[in-house]
Image 1 (cartoon, rainbow, N blue to C red):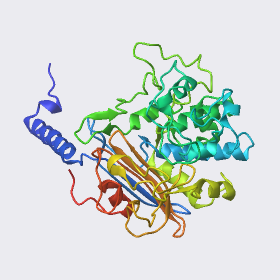
Image 2 (cartoon, one colour; image 1 turned 180 degrees about the vertical axis):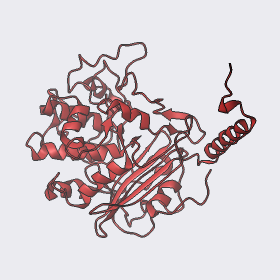
Image 3 (cartoon, rainbow, N blue to C red; image 1 turned 120 degrees about the horizontal axis):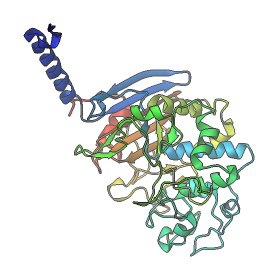
Image 4 (cartoon, rainbow, N blue to C red; image 1 turned 135 degrees about the vertical axis):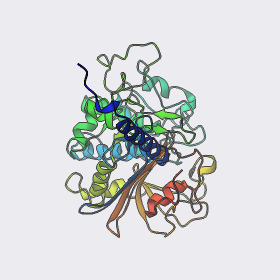
Length: 406
């Protein structure tokens, strides 16, 4: 005896076919760029916008709770961790970091000037990225910094601003030596867990199910750039040489602060990033002291025409005022193009740019408001009409909706 199944009915097959076609069309019509924007004030989130796909392969739409590799905003979060350790008496912003590292670290051309956390966090250490800041498992920070290309031969530490990712593996190594913990675990203990954030550096300290919500980063041509995790954490959360074992059990904290990408490897949702923004907006909100927030956000470098590099290539004018991993917008000076909103208001925070992603965390202290956002699949070198920021950043900073979906 046989039994007819619903799927065998011609009418049912036709309906199911239409459903599949509709789902396919909805996926095809979704914006190629995933965008999330969370606005907030001193008390709460005030507006959430999300559009596009977090994962084009599965058709999963992006939300404000999905973790994304937030690029250089990670630096600001690291600086907040440093200030927590300063308040606890574990670190000193103006001490020679060689003391914490346990080996001599000096600019080879200007060996009499100590390198400090204040100089590293404000990109005035004398380091450059010419020797590369991605240091794989098994190599050491000390060996990398022995490469003469790691240093700006023309400028002593403390005399010149040059935005340099390599500064932050040094900061991370100092954090590891001060805490005795791997950088990712120290950041969880001192920043992420106290603020009840669901975030991590390079996935290692995130709950495994967070990988299922990862935002895949795409280039503007549609190619996958990173974090196509397919629902599972990466087999190795650090940069390991091809064919080598990913064995972190023998890693000694302080040897290689680059492992967990302190310069850009934080995975965090925009809702959680807004929480960090409110900490700054509320003068520390009990997490940091008002004095520490003032140190973080008060510029220690302002472009005067000759004392720094404001951006590489077509990015000139992007950096004009910088504190401790905190930018200040907008600077009314010739050569500065750091006003993506176009209203001349002072905002503090940080931008992110990597793997086709542009991101921002910005607060307007006078207005008591802020915004956290990201957009994927942004073309390299994209420049807006009014600033050195991309069109996506200019639009998301202003809160304008997309004119059309690509």
